Image (cartoon, rainbow, N blue to C red):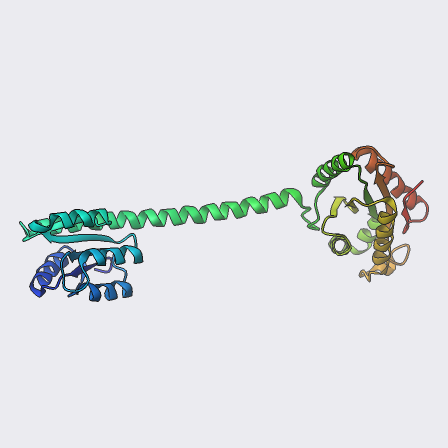
Amino acid sequence: MDDAMNLLVVDDEETLRSVLSQVLEADGFKVSEAASGEEALETFRAVSHPLVITDIRMGGMSGIELLTEIKRHNPDSQVVIMTSHASLDSAVTALRAGAYDYLIKPFESLDLISAVAGRAAEKARLVAQNRQLVEQLQKANEELQQANVVLKEMALKDGLTSLFNHRHFQETLAVEIARSRRYEKQCSIIFMDVDNFKTFNDTHGHPEGDKLLKTLSAILVGSVRCTDVAARYGGEEFVLLLPETPKEGALKIAEELRAKVEAEPFPGREKQPLGKVTISVGVACYPEDGADAPSLLAYADQLLYQAKRGGRNRVLGRP
């Protein structure tokens, strides 16, 4: 039968091996034989048998030594030790070493062989099922952890641009201002908006508008330090948080960003009112422009719209 369990019989007496094999094959096992511990170990390494029945006393490697090697190779394999009445102490030693059970020779009946082998086989099946269940649970746990990572990422990131979202930025800004207050440091934000973005969408369609926002996001990510935080604030508005950065440093970064966007060859930019895609930018610094997150954002937002009213495509750091 295809699902018959592999069983290895080990004994240096050929007659005994033959009897055991006949009984166990009749019980539905797929039986292999070995005449010594060394031969059995070689066979076991080639095919890891779930069940082994071995004599305890053989020339060369003993049954106890074979048991130890089998358990080292595959702890799940079940080993039944055969011993004589005079060697019961050795059988107890084998049980302590990890044997499942023992058989006493000469056998009182062949049914006893079948009974012990059957119990050992059931134990082997349960161990295999348990290991499979543990592996399935581990895999499910890994998949759950991966799903949690994805969900956490989705909770923090904007779906279109993969920048941080509005909520995460607000939380991060509040924490950074608290840190800056405690250590008497400065931090700055750069608030920007794509000029005439509605015109671009109306002219080229929303899919092209989305591509523009993705490209702009890539420009932002490529222009900031690893400690900076870039976020999509909403629609075509973006914001950068620059820890431990004074107003002068933030203005320099903002101007570099404005120039990069202006020079970027966005498809369809020639149809924009300015003949190119541009951004208007407001820069605010803690603590001089605001003592908390709302006031700092309001100040940067005010400068942003002053930049728009003043002709767009410019950076303002003061009214």
